Length: 69
Image 1 (cartoon, rainbow, N blue to C red):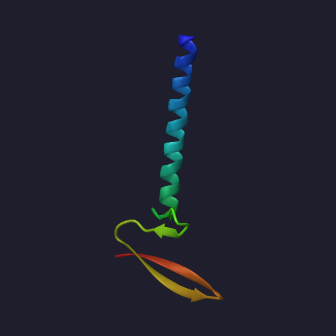
Image 2 (image 1 turned 30 degrees about the horizontal axis):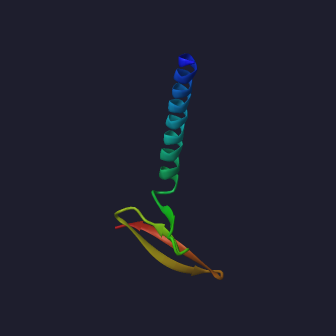
Image 3 (image 1 turned 45 degrees about the vertical axis):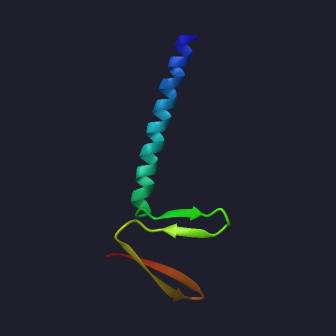
């Protein structure tokens, strides 16, 4: 029984490390931009510190340009 629990802990630790590595890679690919939905259903993109946004209309849609301050 103790061996099994020890193995579960080791497996969980390995899974957490893999998830942390994946999160780091995704953060780099998304420039640190996060999505947040409020309790009343509003949706937000949260920019990391030092980032500015500019809304640009394009072909009936709105593009958001990100730039460093």
